[in-house]
Amino acid sequence: MQDIHTYSFKGKRALVRVDFNVPLDSEYRVTDNTRIRAALPTLKKVLESGGSLILMSHLGRPKKAEEKYSLRHILPAVEELLEVPVLFAPDCMGEEAAKIARSLQPGQVLLLENLRFYAQEEGKPRSLPESQKKFTATLASYADCYINDAFGTAHRAHASNTLITEHFPNDKMFGYLLLAEIQALDNLLHNPAQPVTALLGGAKVSSKMGIIKNLLNKVDNLIIGGGMAFTFIKASGGNIGNSLCEDHLLDTALDILNKAAQKGVQIYLPTDVLAVRSLDPHAETVTCPVDNIPDGWMGVDAGSETLKVWKKVILQSKTLLWNGPAGVFEIPAFANGTLQLVTYVAEATQNGAFSLVGGGDSVAAVTQMGYADKVSYVSTGGGAMLEYLEGKELPGIAAMT
Ligand code: AMP
Image 1: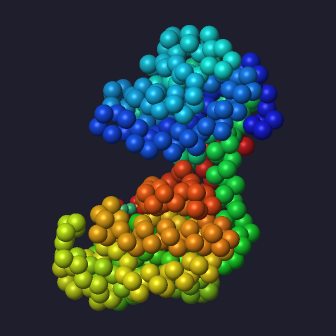
Image 2: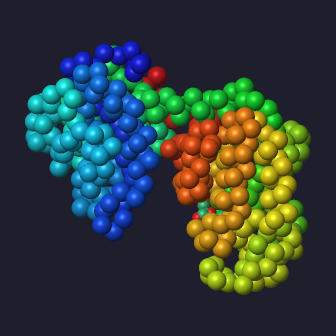
Image 3: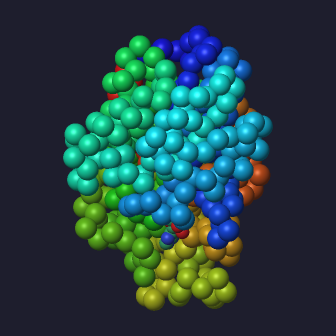
């Protein structure tokens, strides 16, 4: 594998797998350009070194070509951020894409249409290996070198981040974003400054089981908030009313609590919660002990006693990982806990802690508060980050090395 810092791009066409899967409003305007901005260092490096760019990405989860998911919509945003005109190929396959790619001059940029308009991008079960190979060979034929800078899809074995690397045995490399993501995560996993605290929240324990198990070997403190906390509270004998719970995981939750105790990991579940009878933004609220929520009520946010304890733990930490909201933060009346977490993590960072925030909702909370530059690293990958922290090998990374 090559190193983007030293590779010579002069006169070369670089095929870059970026993650431009950005949110769009009803008029197809980009509402959050974080992912495009995150790719800029790599893209500018190629252009400034005398190369040209062929950008490929997915957008959404189309099963066939659909106007709604066309990458054409993001063209103005890419042009504005990159500060150069960007050509567009209305199909990532086909003669037109090949023709534009062939005629690219140094400094020029081509954006290909959504890769997922082709079943071959995701591969099985909708596309046969042979047709997937052809798809990849066509994409590869456009360029002289390949850069993977799409961390958000690194946990998926898709054609554009795995199979394609075979076509560039001596001319493939990671982009700056992917390198930075790996470095931030490795920083956390290997030799982090202690004490290490992980804050996990969100709706489901099931989606975070793997990471919880792996983190028990890495952290000193584990703060568990959001809807997933109630499975642990119920497993410990608490009355959680109508709060979110995954009953099939009660034994697993107990097992995790026991393992944590054996390993000396301190678990901090909420002690009090804000509860409502319905998820109505104007619903009547009560604060009650987390293990004594009245029947018919559900916990939707961390209470003030809980936040006091969490704040203390966070401020004493030297390394912090945060993934998942502490409550139903999309509803302003239930967002306090999550927004408070943002301020605690920022304060700890200011005091010298290393903080890594990842996952759509936690990143949204940090961005909403305007605190993105007050934490050490904001990851662009939700699923990819969780799988990396689970200790899994990510296909998009393995294919390169
Ligand atoms: P996840 O995708 O698992 O990280 O979950 C994120 C979702 O968890 C957000 O949409 C939150 O609204 C939701 N959530 C957080 N806390 C709770 C709670 N106490 N009850 C129900 N949903 C919650």
